[in-house]
Image (cartoon, rainbow, N blue to C red; front, side):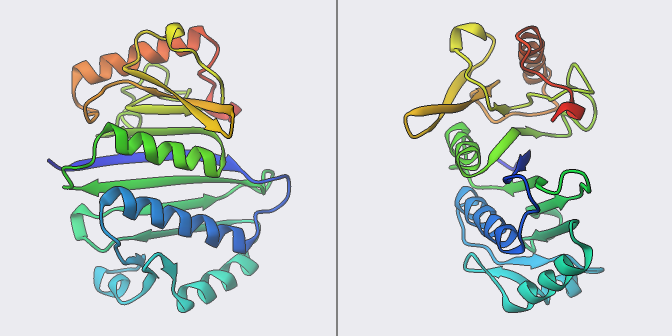
Length: 239
C-alpha cells in the first residue's frame, strides 16, 4: 500500500531571529525523523531545474548536511535574512518525499513553517509510527500546531472551516485535552514534556487516513466541529 501523507506545522524559537546553525540543526532533525519513519537512511538532494541537476547535488547523506549545501545555504541566509526558504527531496521521482522549510515573516523572525511530504510503500508504517513522529516534533519544537492529512484534505477544502486549522488524520495542539471531551476521536494522546503535559494529539482514524474516503472525511469533520465548540480550533491568522 502506498502511503502519501503531508505533515504541516508552525513553530517559534525564542524571540529573536532563528540562527543559521539552528536551522541546520532543525533540518538534520527532520531528515533523521523522516528516514526513521520511511524505514531507510535515504540520501536527500537539493532541488533543481531538472531531475538530473537535482540528483547531482546531495544535501544530506547519512543524516548529515554536505559541505557544499552548508556553504550555499549559509551564503543565502546571510544575503536574504531574515527570510530563508529551502527544500530537499529523496530523489525518487514521481513518488518522492520532501522536506520544505519556510521562514518567510519579516514581522515574526522567530517563526518558521514546515511541510513534510512523506511517500512510502513501507507496510510497517501505521498509526503508531505517525503518532511517534508527531510526538517527537512536538517535543523538539514549540509548535502552535502539527497536522497530518492526505489526498489534499485541507488543500481541496474538505475540512469544515477553510479559515481554521484542520484535523485530517491527526492534529497536535499545545493544550491539555481530556479524552472524554472529544468522544468523536479514535484516540486522544497526551504529549509529555517530562512530567508535565505539553499538548495533545487528536487522531481521527485508527487506519491510515484517506482524504478521499467519505467516512474518514466525516470523522475528521466531526472532530473539527467539536474542537471549535471547545474553543480549540483557531483561525489560521491567529497562529
